[in-house]
Length: 193
Image 1 (cartoon, rainbow, N blue to C red):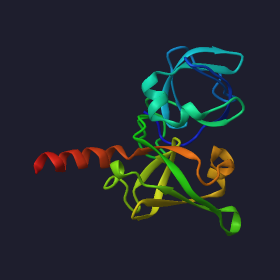
Image 2: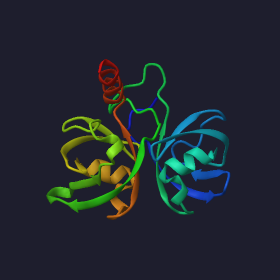
Image 3: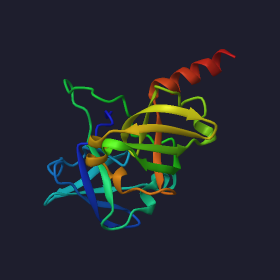
């Protein structure tokens, strides 16, 4: 379980058919077997050496996430898993990516803020609501507006400084995870019909 508050901006060292090596400046001391959220996908550390974390990545994960498009040098959002007693500052993020989607717009706003507009896949319709939570590449964001086929989130300067969103452009693919509470509520309501 994660919070969606990014702890470190890592850099892909190497991507192979089997997995990823990521330089993780602040998370490099993770132990083998630890869970780390990489761009919103929960991965298991298989080796940690010299500040570089290595992860095996399954075919399922390559297919369902934007990790398959990563290249050496790309920035990735990193968060270590919650431990008992840790503060929950964002929202519950499982690291189970629901869908990938395209950034429709990322527009700068006065004062260093930005407005992010992301396409809303049909599979997530009804799970994304204004003032609700969504994880975009593992980042806990509050939905400021949900429209037909899109949602928006206001980004504060701190989010832009600590994550890979500042370097993203329109058309870039992001991993989306709907709020776990919304997912279970939707499943409950479907079962009542």
